[in-house]
Length: 360
Image (cartoon, rainbow, N blue to C red; front, side):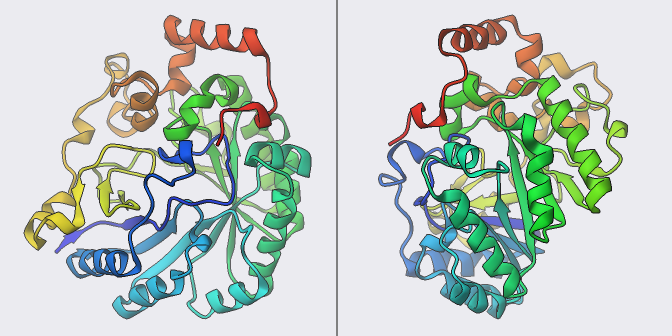
């Protein structure tokens, strides 16, 4: 039995929001072409993995996991195997009844993204009116039910300047644990690269605001998307915990996708294999996913942090350039071709409303 720390299960490709920063590769058509496994197929895949892989926990995500009607059947699978779970949700579909039922399963936490301090910008980023209020109602329902809520702020070029105020809002709602997730373009989000990719200075400003709010409100802040140490000095933000890419390490979170495929992480589109197509021995080997950490960008070779950093987000590099090169967040400042491309696109249209982004 192989050991991995966690597994992310993409329960569905459907979502009630159309965020421009979404990393799901299937968002072009709202997930209709990809679909999702049947209840029987998903239960069988999850049962096989839990029987063959020692996991610390499962992360249920999507799409929007609460759009799946058989969600609680899958929670029963985790309960039967004694495996803890957490969930990533926009909370827009959560009612008091759902929150109370969920509380009975004792989730580790539910991560809820609030990406602006006001409805105008949050709804702009989420792709439609009313999402801000629905998200806050769902968040409050979870807290009333005693469910631990972890806030999330996806930091983009459009909201980096108001991260402090967004953290003020979350703190006012009783949320003290926050995931600071800088935008990393993959999947659908690659279409919004010029529009949403923050610069180093924008991320520094957001981190400075986050550091101050962490002190003011007693927040626990974790930077969950890798920010390469060549870009910022982690010591400048002692109240922010920084993580790096875990692929190929003993703390990797592998992904079970909506078609039953295994992938390196939620941002990677390439498939390592199908759970239903292999026997238990091959499944064990599949879930070890070796080799990824042996490939790093040439630019990063002299860096003393290369063994840990790996050049930042490899999934974003592949999505933007087609190769396992330098993370676009870094490349925008050192790669003349990407820098010119971004400047040209931004000059031609400025900072457009998210409602004008390419969505279906």
